[in-house]
Image (cartoon, rainbow, N blue to C red; front, side, top):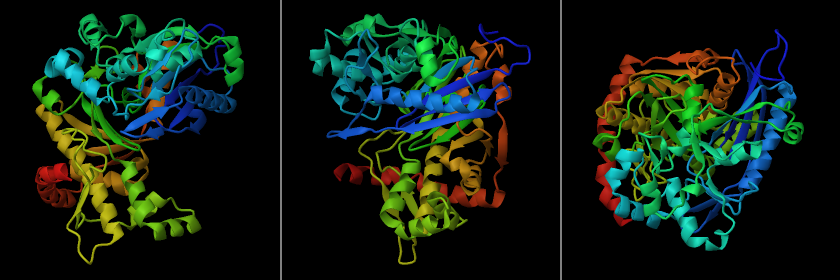
Length: 511
């Protein structure tokens, strides 16, 4: 058990902190998985020319402290341990005082195309993937470190580490040293998956000193204790354990109970990710061609991958803000959520029109930044609600394509659990079951990344021996199974849908 937490009948409490792209959440759970405290704060993304996306990391830390204080004020200060789930790929240089020297470059910051091409040139595209599980792409953290080395030489005398949000927040909490969990380290594009250490040859070829990177450690490792000053500020008892967490996608997968092969998490936010786990490293050609990473899960000795739609909830937001003003007026008067209203008003049958949802380029398995969105099959009878349904259908078709591609890579998925905004809609969940041809489940706790981090915190505090044992904290709410009649109708539509990308590829390139 944990020092300073006495009493045989004391219920242990654990905090999961989820540092996302546009907001941070803190949630406190007890040993049963009940959410007993919660806080949320949003923050800005600073967009610039040339697909630049930055963020004030110190502001993110201030917001994180506020959410932890809000959550602990509801749950009480007797929190045994704190663990962090963090957005992937963002990088910032920090000094020895653990202060960010400039804004973080976010994963969505694609100014590092030149650096990504340089990695492919000097390291070999497929060779790099086989060693690190990551293929060269401007999304990846290593390319952003290279950009800082080249373009921010004014900071060279002050840089102590290049930190992701994972190691940055842990340092702010009071970690004894600068560490990065394996699930996040394996996304950097410089970690040898066999040795679990930074590959010196890779770093040397791109001129990144190894000393600038944090030490890789296993997710769930205890890396320090909360000091008195910060403990008082956030309302948590001094001495609470600080626990290495993980990249937000594998943390969410753990929080959804995705801990063995055959199950996947469909997570809906601004974008959509379908993530799954496997026990042996998958870095074959099928994974490479589909742009599927092979990284570490937060569970020891398990690997992790995900498929990605760049557009998820943001697609409905675009439609609502530009074309559904009347719906917004109705929902404003009646207190109904605008997205729920749009979905409920959409047809129950497969859409009469089709949408290619590549409004921000395509995700996996193509990762084609030149691809564009399209609406096909419009007629004078088409309504905005037909287009809503077409968007729901198309996003689900995209993930069906990924399910089939993953199966070709010997990653088979049978059951899918869903969290995020879509999970609030029974209609959307049934649609997924019908198109996927698989059972789709929702969970009692929607904040899966917070719960996943809290599970790691609970194991570190001694409440459970392993993450698998701690899955008792995860509970299914509803289960949706395919409707055989609708499934057949969607299968016929899907046969047409899979032709759209190739048919428009050349035209989109010209546009």
